[in-house]
Image 1 (spheres, one colour):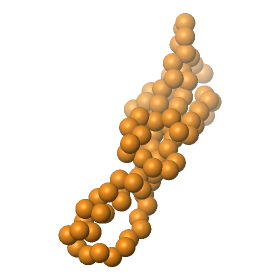
Image 2 (tube, one colour; image 1 turned 180 degrees about the vertical axis):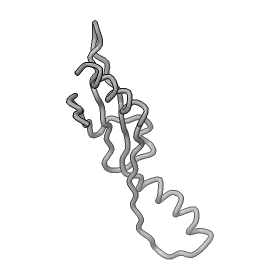
Image 3 (cartoon, helix red, strand yellow; image 1 turned 90 degrees about the horizontal axis):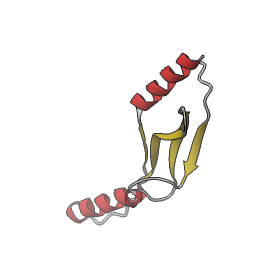
Image 4 (cartoon, one colour; image 1 turned 135 degrees about the horizontal axis):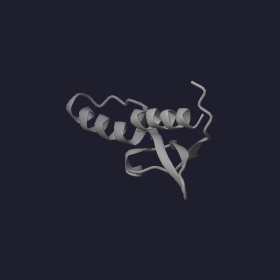
Amino acid sequence: MGVTFDILIAPGLICNVQQFSGMICQLMCEFKKRKHNKIEILAAGGRYDRMIAHYRDMQKRKISSEELSSSGVGISISLDKIVLAIQKEELLN
């Protein structure tokens, strides 16, 4: 694709931090505007161990007392912002 803009990965900066446990991150891109730069969040995610444990405990009461260990990781990607960034970059080149 030939995309040449810088991308910044910021571990630990994210909205809705109560949903996550462990590693969390955001993928950001700085767009250069006429008078100022604008930072857009292209993706955000992290580990969902605490949330999984919460729902697992709810199910455990119904099913059995067996000890389970589950982990999960997820990321939300803003494809519309990525496509827009690529289109803007292609217009500049």
